[in-house]
Image (cartoon, rainbow, N blue to C red; front, side):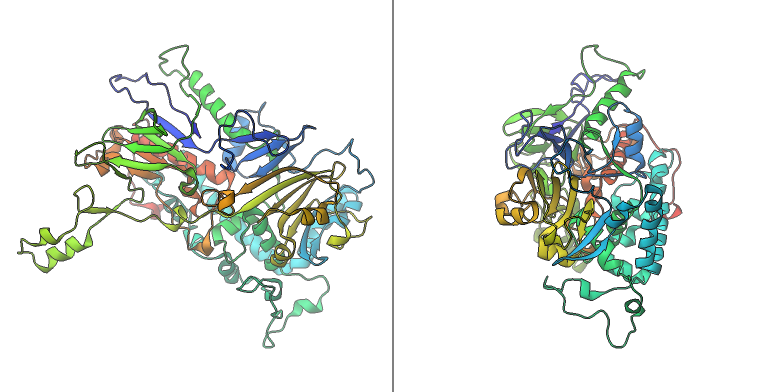
Length: 616
């Protein structure tokens, strides 16, 4: 975990308060060198998975992303961050190692994308276009997609464009500090203002049904996870596609393959919003950060320090950094009346006005506690009501039934603080385990062409995605050829490969460079790990608020936060992941949280009230 507090002698107009204003706690960024070894500077225990934005550097200098592999050119916050640190954050082509100096020089360079259906069957393969000149290839590839998916291709692309137009409004609203309605208290408020909240509450299949996209159930798995035996359509409907050569099913092929690649979830498990987000980068400009995407977080610390150093803010000491970074394993957070204290086991790491949790609640392994608001024994701690509090309805019923009865208060139940308020339960988005993904990196691989139904002299797709059946039969969700000459391959899967499976795909001479398990069974830390949220087809999309715990409101001393004196508070950046997860989404959640924190500290404040989010 990283704790990044300002120094204890924080300078302001009033220096009587000794608590540092803010701390951020979350997963440490992760980069490592060579096979299956954590870097010596990484404090994590071996059974902690670490940041989902991570990479490895092999002995030949190749950098391979283990998770969060790509950035979309339309991700404005990430792109703006890159502009602020151009010497460190340099674009590179994702998942590709420059060829040259390898051993498999007889192989044709891989190109394009393929969708593998298992048992030597391909639903889509654009690699044959690699033999054409570049200008002709750039024309033929999109024409091929138009031919294969026809009107459904236009329908989905039109829906994506509309969603992007709505989504892009968020950037102007995040920068607006003048209007009260732009201070979103929760991600659901934000999606509602964008007109996208309803998408988060339905499955992607249901959304595609609404668009009228063709559905071929013979390409999907049955409800029990087995290969479907259903025909393409019932006898009552006429399928004109089967009479035209080359026609495909956009939903079961391209869309399903993209969601399995990005989130390891099918269209029934995805909600409509995250499904569109997964599809947006298709055919658009994408990139990775040279040296690894984890450098985005390193650069964020560098840029924040630089902004402060270049500012006219009052500096307390030339020797002391305003923003500090400490690698500590936070185990306990304890809230009192005036501050929040962080602990690593029994060691206190300091008291803070604001604490920001930048890791999923399911994965953070932190115990959140609070002292009794009744001012009783401070050594007796209680669970922090992270889901908020609700009124005791039994008390309300007693009072309504017999207003004149003095026994109503005797029959009423109070919580552990002696109050008639009780902690609300957490929504599924904060309790359901994240989806398991296993990243495997091998070198010196010789891909088995016959196993995949390809000829030895036939070019391979650079990226091999799979259908639902392909995932079931092959056990992978993605296979990326990073370098054919070096035999450098990266795969995503739901489980680790045994030796026989690896030899079948990669040849007996392959070398396992690294295996990263995100989640999995108990032996793989499945209770706390995972790669992406389990969206539950929209059933798990309801989010927690960004303000997870409001100390003074809980203690009955809430004041107007616009005055900059709102008491201790715990904020939760990852609340935004309930409906959709991506690097840019995390950046949006971070900026939304920062805006709320700045308002609470009195650094910014709205000047214009609004009637509500409907006006947006």
